Image (tube, rainbow, N blue to C red; front, side, top):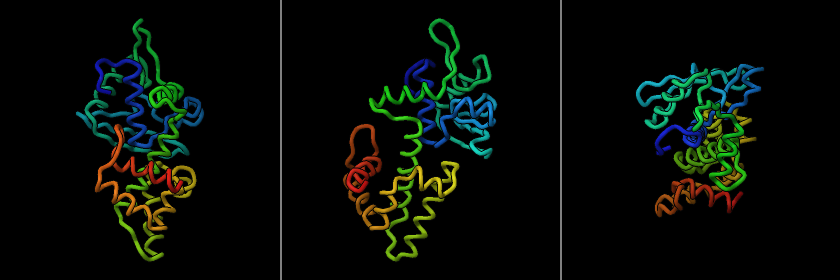
Length: 223
């Protein structure tokens, strides 16, 4: 997102940044038309408000749930300010070298992800990774409980909190988004010491935080 201008790749990078940090669905034009429900690529200008570096998204999501999502980022705010000034009511769009206007859609996002990662990743994979990563961080932050009752309480609390971020029920969050190895490794009292080792060493690879690297290693070993 640090590059100059507002070309297609910069707009796509902004959408992916939001996808990764907010868990907002990527969106589908058919859902927007038939159900009046929206995601990142189907947002209209009216769904975004920018005040300085603060951005607020207010929109109707899946199942008619009203969502309010707030983020703070200077680069993202600048992109959205630019997009709102373009012709048309769609939020995420760009002007090509010939002066033609194009709207970003979910296929563009998935193609961008495949190009950047060199793997068959999709927008849904980012939601799944985000939910799994957040659940692991929450469990580590809460620490290792010893008795069965407390373990159950912490497990359920984590699933509920992550599912709220996903705008899903706890059942959907646990069944479809949170990798089962995260919950299982916590119950078996493996997750916390595993993350402790990585936090102490700060071992990682370029592009990943230590906790993301720790999670990947956990999933490789226990997933």
